[in-house]
Length: 183
Image (cartoon, rainbow, N blue to C red; front, side):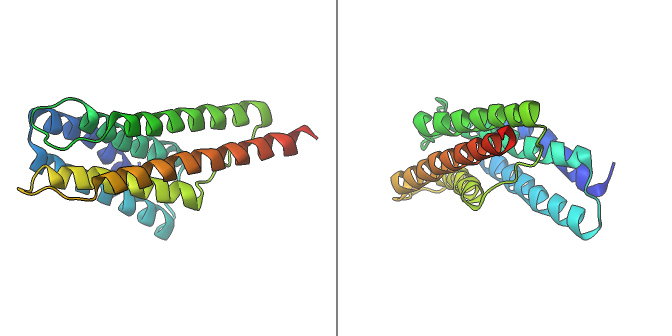
């Protein structure tokens, strides 16, 4: 169990804590846990690369931890909660979850039918994740400050656009992988 993998496991364990904090209305503490979890994401990758701690387990757990945190946060912040004055629209959460499910099914299909395990994230996929992280962060902060931030609609729209765009990009890449392995 490398240091990088321990950080990844810490991120996984932080997800139910974060969710419980949001549900209970402890938004400030939830924000702190979310930021700490995001920090572990940066650190585990850095440690794995810098100190040669990349492992098969880490390559499996890291994206799982990311998805659990992001999707969990999106879902809990889009559910009806009297402690939240600002919420993420359910349509945005559904678009992210649908894209992630399709990506998972696509990656599994590619592996089963072609044996190809390599499905690295694209720049658009990384921008989508950044937009999702920013959206979650903005909603958490907006529920803590006494004034409303005026840019939510734009942020929600940008996040949706990047999410759907990256989904189409991954679909095109999947089709190309299948096409290359057929002939």
